[in-house]
Image (cartoon, helix red, strand yellow):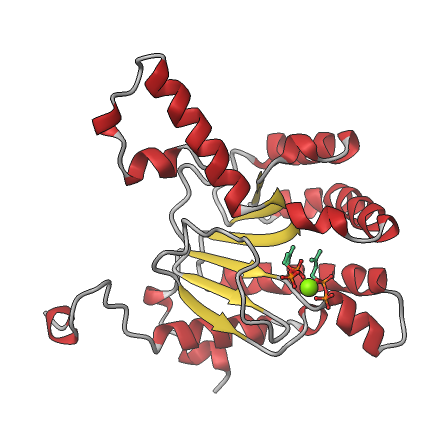
Length: 247
Ligand code: IPE
Ligand code: IPE
Ligand code: MG
């Protein structure tokens, strides 16, 4: 029996978010430049997407570039941006065929023009599809997103379109770049790092966290099945006690 056969397909997460980490270390282990690891990491994106499709996951959010990643050596930043443009343009047709919607979260207006155009075209081509929503977090950081939300809400209050007492959790959610996307039930981080690195801080309030030692370029479909099995072994109590959940 394979791992996938152990999964309860009626209880898979609707939304899985992944911090794809370890490309650089993987490349260095092979005696290669860091960018080689990023290139091979694209294959792992395909694997994760296929596994998500098999498990009827509706949203797959991948942390691909953080606002902090601009601080990396220029050569790596440029290489990542090139990889993004080339990958989107070469994959969009196949993704469209497999009914995937490609969208982004984050400060995409801060990306190079060519990237923005490629991403906008990919969204335009796939937006009416009904399969998995593949969401790329690009130039993303949760603190940036929360600051932006605070500004938008402050403007609405100051111009009278929003009453201070009407600010709720939903007001915050609706002003984040993840507006309309359900919070992830499962957050995965590869490469053995146990931190969140400014990813989806608001949205992961009740997410189950799964950490794996696997470096992202080694990530295969089985690794996503394993994470979902781990998720299915958890008791999600949301502040209550076990006995209340059994009803
Ligand atoms: C994740 O791999 C990809 C990005 C952050 C763009 P890293 O590049 O962080 O790889 P490590 O963590 O240095 O091994
Ligand atoms: C987080 O990984 C960002 C992405 C996966 C895009 P990093 O490798 O940048 O995170 P830190 O610096 O180790 O926390
Ligand atoms: Mg890293």
